[in-house]
Image (cartoon, rainbow, N blue to C red; front, top):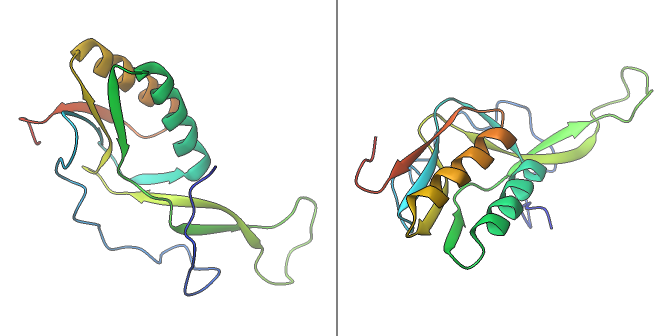
Length: 139
C-alpha cells in the first residue's frame, strides 16, 4: 500500500509549501549502511514503495531495511483531455521532498556486497543521484 498522510490541514497545497529542510534525517539512527541523496528533488510514493519492495526482496533474511522519508506533499493533476481553467485538479499522488544530503534508506547487514547491490538497485530506480555511506563516515 502506498504511503500517504492520514490527515492534512488542507487538501491541496501550492508547489512551494515546503522550502524548509527537515534536519533529523542527515544522521544515522538505525542501520549500519545508508543510501544518501546527493542532489535535491522529489520522490513519489509509488517509486518509494517499488524501491522498498525490491530492497526487501534482495535483503531477504540477511538484513533489515528502514525507510527514512515519508511522502507528505500532495500533487494535484487534471484528468486527460480536459480544457484549461475550471479550478485546480484533484490530488493525484503524494511526493516526499528530498534535500541534498538526506539519508533515504538505512540498511543493517553484515555483508558490504549486499549493501552495494542495494545501492545499485536504488540508483537504477530513482532519478536522483545517490551514494552509499557507512555509519562511521557521516559525510
